[in-house]
Image (cartoon, rainbow over all chains, first blue to last red; front, side, top):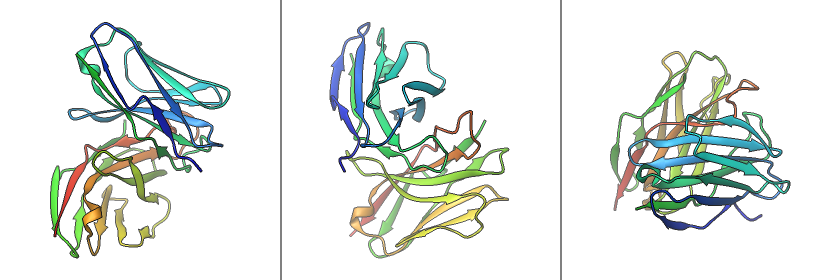
Length: 114
Length: 118
């Protein structure tokens, strides 16, 4: 099976712009979670989608949003980019929503905001 | 709210030797999962080992084992016979077992960078 894929892998944007990142989960996985990884804050949970519905949300401003499509692919959008949004954005998928299911991570999208 | 603390930002080990990475956590829950993830440089994060809090037996995966002390809220990772390929960032993570609420997300520690010397 193919692993979790994320596109693009690298992205450079300017302050004030918006960006959309994409995540394709492992086939058959219905849950997709997003995490932000920075040197200062570490790994922080953004949100989780399951069956096209946001099930859980971390403590991020409303500029961060996401969605999930019927094929379980997910996108996250960041509007009005700030320098502090520079980070590695990781996507993770799992089969179901229960706490026992293992999460598989993608390679991440490295976003640089200038 | 749950928190995870890794007090060792960096560790170093000689090839073929054993190293232990520390992790403590804070929670008021009685049932949860604990994980160790490995993130090699510029590579994907992968699960190394997981522990279910209701199981008293420590988890083991080949050269990787944990020392789970529930009362002390401690969850350390022991790597035996260290190999060059073990060099990576290691993250300790917590997830609630309770259905509903925040069961989807992992709460991570800040990580420990492990170097392996040949």
